[in-house]
Amino acid sequence: MKYITAVLSGMLLLSGVQLAQADAIEAGKQAFQKHACASCHGDDAKTSTQPDYPILAGQHRDYLEQALMAYRRGQAGAPASSNVRNNAIMGAMAAQLSAEEIKNISAWLATLESPLGVRR
Image 1 (tube, one colour):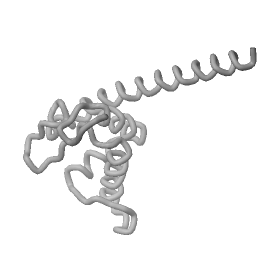
Image 2 (cartoon, helix red, strand yellow; image 1 turned 135 degrees about the vertical axis):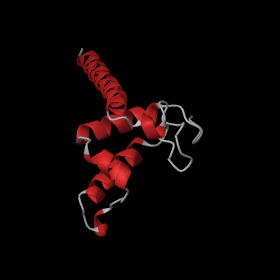
Image 3 (tube, one colour; image 1 turned 180 degrees about the vertical axis):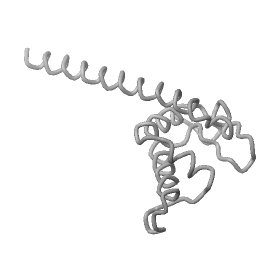
């Protein structure tokens, strides 16, 4: 009986985590639209308006989070030793994002199909 209770508890926990992840992904899509990220990176996050703008679709979630935080630090004038990225456009955009929006946008972008690599 304890085993069955443990398995059912684990399944409920897992389904709760999956629902939270689905909510974060949907919130990320909404934040991407709200902050007009598509104006440079394209609606699909892989059809950029300029060839030197990166493809965001399919990037690793943690990479995207770190990049956006680095743009925020650069915009805030943090010293170079603080892992900063200095770009006037992205710095201004990232400064508008909350930490939760950064996590959600990164989660959504990581789920998108992309020409960047092969998914297994």
